[in-house]
Image (cartoon, rainbow, N blue to C red; front, side, top):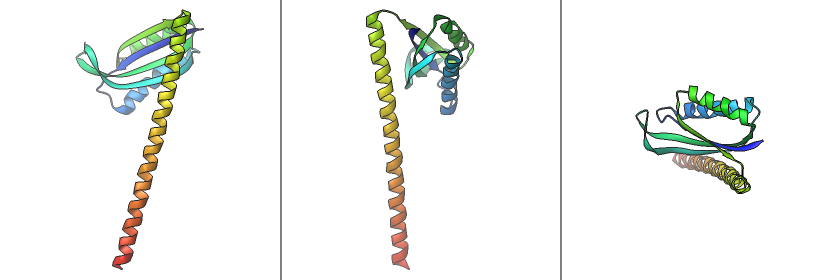
Length: 146
């Protein structure tokens, strides 16, 4: 199996749910074709170097995966047929130095994903604590008024 990286840009006019849906569609094609998805890196909304289909921005996502060569043709066919993906690029890593760099990219993407997940959990916990404190203060104020 070969090491691949596919970057694709989704139209900026889509809602967050639609963007996630488009990313899941690409992942589903890889899964269906028997590729091993190693990491996903959502780079978010970014400015394009030049306008594409009258869009100056796009939502960037990078997928790192292992697959056989024939999987790429099917993946790119599906991406080309998807009107919501405006650009894509697939890179194959073959040389030892390239594969070592690929492994570093996968590790970085996985660590970044874990860090973002941890930050999200911490944010949710902070909101819960803030709501609890507010409820406690309101209840205390009601008791003093009564």
